[in-house]
Length: 360
Image 1 (cartoon, one colour):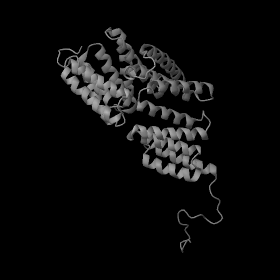
Image 2 (cartoon, helix red, strand yellow):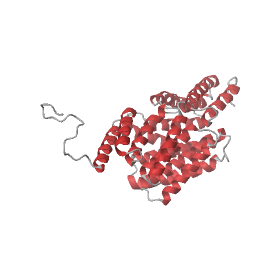
Image 3 (tube, one colour):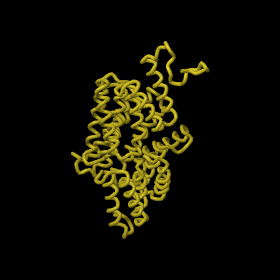
Image 4 (cartoon, one colour):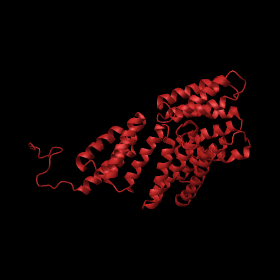
């Protein structure tokens, strides 16, 4: 009923009017999803959108699955990792049954599932993540995916190799701990990806800089692996990359962002490897403070970098910092995961050396 106003109440169909077609419904949901993502990807708004898409398009519709992917991505940082992993596994299986294996939405869902595995970090996960990232590169090489989607898989593979090199000593189920080989392969992959992105998007494009950040971390890890080699010339490429990334992040975003934070940790680790403890401490201490802006980050990492820098001149202070890192990691990660074991071993090492003048 319209009453005496002649106005149709919201939600009432106009007699004889045709409802929206499937294509029109999809277009409306496309626009709504784009708007929500553009304005911060609020989980509550995404949940409302996903529920409406499920009701009107069906739970297996591509757009519904895409909205669910966005919802899970927004929800995962504040949720226990096992809950997130279960949600991503369920979504991956449902999307895999509904979409072609090379569909962009399924590519994104598989990528996020492996991100959750990487965050879990249980014994054996380092090898598993490397294998899954390598398999994804091969799948995207065989299937007709875009150059960007292929490049994302390559960069993810390089990052997985970097993780295995960094943390392999703390994973008792690792098949072989060969950090030099992992870092050499990661270096080759990310160098080629930087060249491809530079020629395709331009040297100044953000995606090119994202790959350069991985390169800086690989260069830093290779320097740390060559313990005792304090040649400044070997350290210069990593420092140059880190400095360039910090400048770019300020220019691009007008603030000290996530990329600049990671670059700062690279600087701190390189300076520590060179024996320049005080500037390394300054870099790491600032990074540890700034990291608290981002509740989804591993707050233990900057603290461990700081502890290693402090150890040269203040073993007792380094031990306190390492214990704080261990507390942060126990809050974020499961027991026996490689990040927790790394912090535990750092505390044990500093406990033994805290009574001496220099951590041996």
